[in-house]
Image (tube, rainbow, N blue to C red; front, side, top):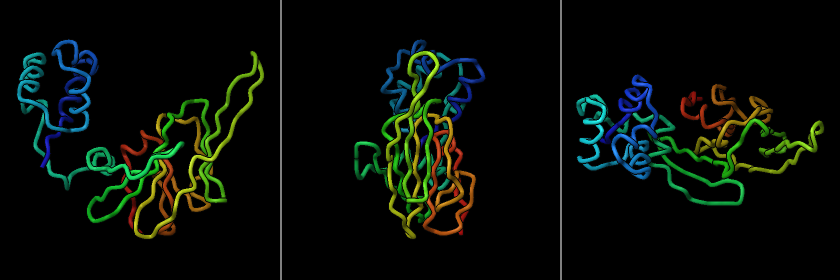
Amino acid sequence: MYMDYSKLWKLLVDKSMSKTDLMEITGISSRVLAKLSKNETVTTDTIARICFALNCDVGDIMECASEERLSVYGTYKKYGECVAKGEMVKTVQFTLANQKYKVYQSNQAANKSTHIHCENDGGVYWEFFYAIGTVATTSEKKLLIKPHKSTDEIVIVLIKGKPAVITGLDENGFVSSRGERKNKTDIYVMSEAAFKLFSPRQI
């Protein structure tokens, strides 16, 4: 069992408040806010401060939940174990409902100048576009990861931030977050936003 603070974030939205606003009116630190965001344990004093500031009851901001209800993203955030760190990616492993997952997360955050390419050599490439002067642009392309295929794990390449585009999905053994794997060795490639809603289809 764990404490789920999803109700708190919904309440903030309903009150047109940000997490920064919450810190200001309660005096909680960014470290405590990060713990709340990860559904980690906080003190009763913290809970009391939030309830007082928002004029609500404990049940309005939190509830006790079972690990069985965790999403893939929730399990990744709560139980993911970093097993390797490289120049371009870190590797995180976890298990959900007896299914093993391996996530290669980019260290750098993508933005609207970033294109991600899934190519037929099995590699995922990072291409960054930047301006030269006022009219011309150029780009730099490098290998992000050549992920290891596995029949025992669901493998995901997770791109931090919001890339402009991810090409080559649903071909060459790469699948989008909403796609369907044709083989157990197919690899998912997705942004953070897509990962939050990700639920793999079983084959």
